[in-house]
Image 1 (cartoon, helix red, strand yellow):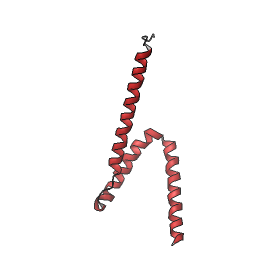
Image 2 (tube, helix red, strand yellow):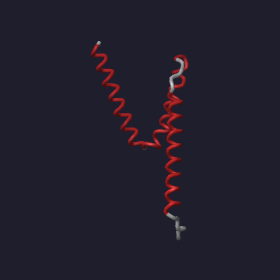
Image 3 (cartoon, helix red, strand yellow):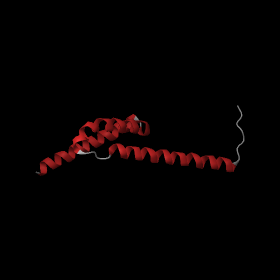
Image 4 (cartoon, rainbow, N blue to C red):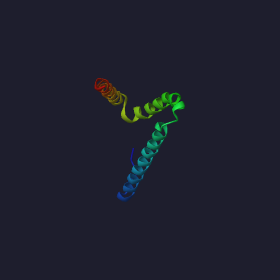
Length: 91
């Protein structure tokens, strides 16, 4: 298979367009995650916790990969456990 010859300027424009598209996709994903994680009135907070967590995982797994995400969640849970222990010992 032969590829069509693309000029340097055309290739540069294509790369810039792809970079801009990726920036916009990341910005959109960030705003969607902020909307999912925004605090809700306390009465409705518990009913929204599980859907938010599953939506966050649905976004994070493809971005980070299951292994890396699992490692990050493990580290976060150990850190939160240590913080909770330190606070209980402080009282």
